[in-house]
Length: 94
Image (tube, rainbow, N blue to C red):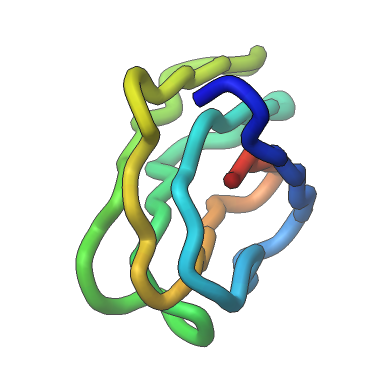
């Protein structure tokens, strides 16, 4: 959408990144050496439970960029990020 405001949130640990209704527009993930597992984003403002908005599987050290097409993914309650060790995340929301 032209003219919409996008905000970013960053974390190195599992946490509630956004505590309001929003649209997930994109995600940047960085995995350090030894990081394995899954990054899971939940439609929740306080815990790793509820509807899964996005799941990204880590396979090796590096970085992933995930761009959400269209208007993004609607998170009605907020965005909670469950992160494995040695992983950082930046989410972009409208």
